[in-house]
Image 1 (cartoon, rainbow, N blue to C red):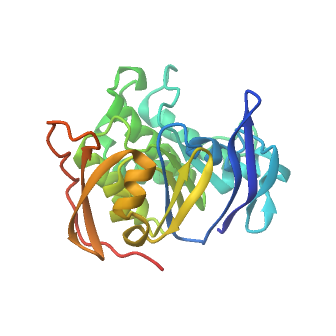
Image 2: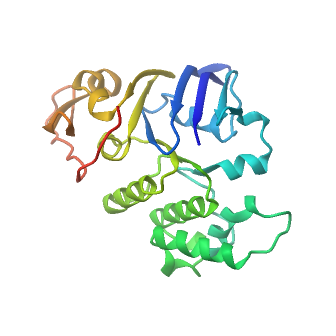
Length: 272
């Protein structure tokens, strides 16, 4: 499913936090939104799953304005994994993942054997099968994050939105999560802080600063040392080669801190 943001402006508290953002995400591609805190990444994503309505512009799914979809139609089209989901409800892991099947049911519809099969597969992919009977409220932050991934997978929507999906996850599970979502063949839009994760797993990246899109394209081409210094305010060393870079970061003030080690990398491809 193709996603289009057409001249989208979002206002919060009387201030435009996203300004005239235009972006097309082709069906089946993985696109990363990157930028400093407060750059507008999450606000732009929220217009896609209708948590925010643009002050100006239109968000479309295969040419259809998302604001004209019913709630059920929107949920069938777009699944969302938030960075800090509300999980203080009295449900088990399996019951929580089953909520992902709700858009496919009539009101008060019963879970079918097919629903249970899809949920079991989603829990397996998120590596939480052993937690099925645990109450979500008793889990660690990382475990809860994987439950939310499983719920999004169970929803089987053609578009998957990830807002800081690696929040609370250790390095191994960060890579497992991104590898999993990349293998789905769905349209994925993810707000990411880790530029190495974005470089490894995204076909394209879109850089936002102060609410505006300042660069877009394949990660290896977009993430120049100059752009990283200007946008993120850190110095960077580029390791590897130009087509497969790895970044190590240091404060611009030349402090005594060590370079931040890059995430473990494996070979990945980018789309021009």
